[in-house]
Figure 1 (tube, one colour):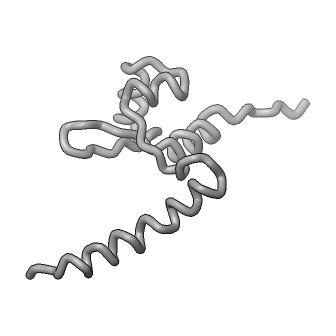
Figure 2 (cartoon, rainbow, N blue to C red):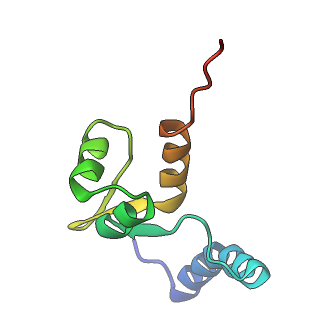
Figure 3 (tube, helix red, strand yellow):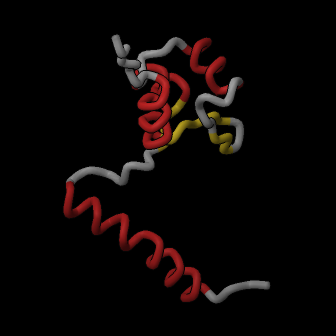
Length: 91
């Protein structure tokens, strides 16, 4: 099944238009930016072995795209809030 080129162009435009308008309004790219392992480690201040361990234990979610392992910035932020929320002692 082949789609005509104009239908593909319309589908791509429908997906990109909200992202482009968000970028124009805020000046920032959308929050779902993918980071490499090294960038993710620097961003959340973890070594690569610790990042790998957290991923293996399911504390962080990695996305494999081809041969690359990438992390969504928004998912890293959410995981760090859960992992590093201070516990307040009640005396």
